[in-house]
Image (cartoon, rainbow, N blue to C red; front, side, top):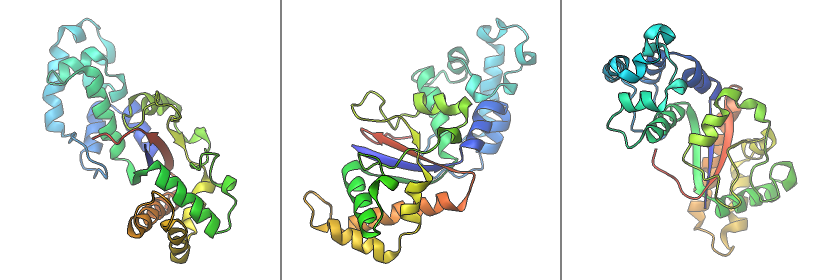
Length: 250
């Protein structure tokens, strides 16, 4: 089982995915650097022929004069399966293509990310809390996962998109939570940790059964700290937690 922490600007993602015309969205997404791997370039030169094909299609014409009969004015979230089939005939399926587009847009608003084994990660977080003399329930839940924060951080119009389309977690996996916002109290565990605290947590767990080597443990905690610092630097970003069966290619 794997665990993922992402620091994401969900407000900008919601704006691009749900509100802006697809042409505007592609124009803004193309120059953005993606921290996580993605197969979509969002090149406007590639989009325009696809929109032209959609506009000429029988399925689009049957809609009448919606959006002044111009699919370029439609946000990506409103693309129907018929639209996606016309625009991406090479896709495995319209549902897969929608997820590819969403993941690619999502990845462009990720500022920091952590991937790791859930057991090792939780054990290191518990060790860090002990070294820093912090009560675990102040920052972790009963399973030693990050405490849940306020769901109000996730814009309502993209909540379902995240939970239904993001392939990095499996809602059907026993004991696996859906995506959730991480509480501020959890991040403080890492933001205020000193190098001495990290070394102490690593020493605490280094002799535990089934733990990786010392350098792997130290790297995991340092990566988590970097993610926390990125969360702490901006009031507009949100920390998300996924607990997943495996990490999928984006």
